[in-house]
Image 1: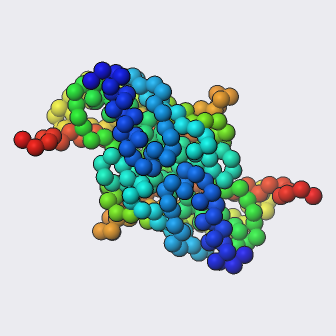
Image 2: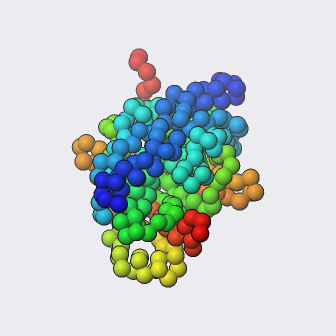
Image 3: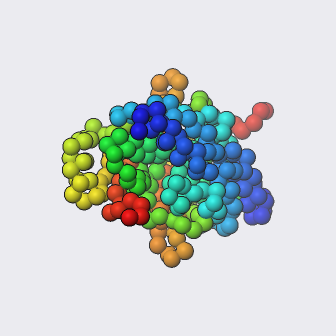
Length: 157
Length: 157
């Protein structure tokens, strides 16, 4: 799969989920180190005129999921990727469009991940995500653990 | 405000937020100790056919927000209530409709909260929320801190 096809694949998966399509997310950057998603404030606004906390968490969770899914796809690994736990800090209200940026935690070691996935067909990824305001201040940050599971057999014989 | 009016007020606030209306939430229980919200799986489904993590967090966050907002309203206190941080654990996939239940943490002490709010016009609430599956197993749990701030003056002179 080319990088363009991979981006289209990830964006297609996002828009196929009704609660995600409602956020109107757009994939703005995707490579081996980062996944960035943009969403308009108007579709994600709360009663106080700023971004709804649930939308912020959703977008960051999806950015992390896209990061891990694409990283695996690039290596020919088709796995189920799901979020296992998250710690969220809402630091400042956001009155701008939402730009969620996800990257692997500093401890990330590709070789160790691939070895564990080969041995156990299951591995965890630590991911950091954040949304910044246009003035550079962090609006919301999140540290999450994702789990990837490779089915013993994909599809029928 | 009667309890019926209070429920209608909370539900009206929910449906006025576009990203929340998309989840199709319904207030199923609201009293001084709990706030429960229901949402259909179809509006909140992910690519794996189970509930989307972002929807689970959104619904739990809103249930906690409704609990705190209603608790304050019942005491004649109009405050801005927002979530400050959350720890989320995704324990098991949910293939049922979403029922989020929020209640105050065990440490909750109404007298201390009211005293602090009177002194500082600002106070934190610890809230626990969860979504259970129809087999009784916890699908997702969340511990959150909400902050309520009473403006120095509400409305014009």
